[in-house]
Image (tube, rainbow, N blue to C red):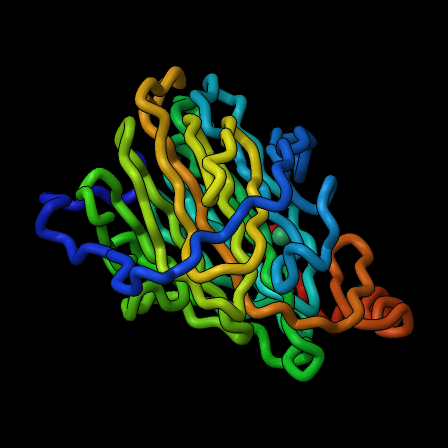
Amino acid sequence: MPAIQPENILALPRVTIDNPLALARPVVKLVKAQTTFEGEGFMVRRPFPGGVSMRDVDPFLLLDQMGGFELEPEEAKGTPWHPHRGFETVTYMLDGQLQHQDTSGGGGMITDGSTQWMTAGSGILHIEQPSEYLLRHGGMMHGVQLWVNLPAEHKMSDPKYQGIEAQSVKLLTSADGGAIIRLIAGDLAGHEGPGSTFTPITYAHITLEPGAKVELPWNPEFNAMVYSLNGSGAVGIEQAPLAESTLAIFGAGDTVVLQADGAQLGAAKKLDVLVLGGKPIGEPVAHYGPFVMNTHAELVQAVEDFQAGRMGVIPPAHV
Ligand code: MN
């Protein structure tokens, strides 16, 4: 079952634009995701980093769409144990099962609409693997990993893990009742998502029926992006065409508008998007592999701390 489905869409709270003078944001850039390989060799579609300025996506660092198609038996792959420091990894599974474990004691199965929110902070080691069932039998696997940067004052905070069950995601609908809005984190039209963040963001997964339209009030202090997971539509005040696996970056304004094309050619027959934005941190970013700090010296320290085992030690059962 893909993500969480409400029993009755029309019973959900509707997100409407009450201010008739609200200005719909224009689209300033459209970027096709790049295909690359991660971990033990699974394919991801990556809208950023890549063809956008990191200033445009601040406070986010990376977005990976994992899978989105049927896997053959023995085809599923994960990542080996690896470290992180200085930011948060947010893994949302629409479909399939990902088994996670980290050295802070966090872990569990991320599946069918649940989210794992890992604040790496001062340092953590983790492993992400497909479930035994998915590995043996194959099947649908579709997930997203988002990296959210931490401001300098929180980069060395204690590692933290939040398991967000699919049922705790805040469900809303559009004015026309043609879309399921799943609010994972932050505020949207006065509703709150379950994810708790250091940096103010709004993060939602929306499924639009063919032809459905969504208008979202959007914090004017936040940047705004829409990424198409599957399907096609139009975005922004100018109704710019949005193809599959494409990121739209919006300019200033009060609302984010999008509409699904009437004919959806993909297997899903619907438009699925992520809508995300946040308050830019505006600090220098120094990045080396799994570490994201503010200065080069802090990266050198991160590598030393990892090599000395100060970010945690792989549990004996895994060595
Ligand atoms: Mn990782």
